[in-house]
Length: 310
Ligand SMILES: C[S@@+](CC[C@H](N)C(=O)[O-])C[C@H]1O[C@@H](n2cnc3c(N)ncnc32)[C@H](O)[C@@H]1O
Image (cartoon, rainbow, N blue to C red; front, side):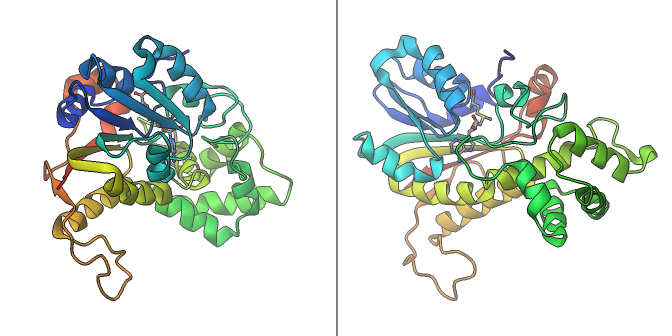
């Protein structure tokens, strides 16, 4: 199995201020990379609550973290249920929360999960296998306009219209069910001389579908709000994002919480009564060093934002 290199590891450990006796939540446990280091740095009694909705992540991490014994609590759930998860485990509040968004290497490399365009697999892309709709369902069911909007918004690709048109034509011949079918549609939608050189032309389409299938932006919005109710005073939240929409959402949420308002922008007036809930620790996002990017190219688009509960 391909090992997942935890992104911005040193920075996360430093900003979370991992210490003995404290309690941390890793909302995106994955292969347990960040979690293992948090446990190491908070030895000998610091506790870690690890959440992931992918049963495979829980299985891998349970094995990887077994040496930490009773200091580790693993839960298979959607991190958007953070408050309930934390209370169910009997914690009053926590000292640090980590969100490392996106997919894990084991999900990308697993032949049957459909996250990657390398190799043939069913167009699935569900991180939680209990979710109702797979990528193939969306591709074949969504009205063309909606599909185009989704590819444009989440994939930030200028070829969304052409890709969608080809998908529409292909749908008339039958169900699009595999990663290779979708990849070849995207390849033929983009004129060959304009194919990007550094990434596969299908990268952005696959990313957009993954975000939609897993409702990643909605879950992020919810977990940020939930984090406010479980973080103790002085506790920190670290969010690593790989997509500009996610980063914008985190930046905006932190800014509003610092100003003392977390109401959604569509509300005509503030209903949260202006309580300041967070202090932004670094105004600019923290980026991986050149050395880290060379060693782990997956880190290149990562941005870390940190805020502290007040
Ligand atoms: C980038 S990986 C985390 C890797 C981890 N930090 C490590 O070092 O191994 C992201 C993980 O978050 C999980 N995930 C994404 N959205 C989730 C959600 N809404 N609820 C729970 N887990 C989620 C994915 O299943 C995946 O395993």
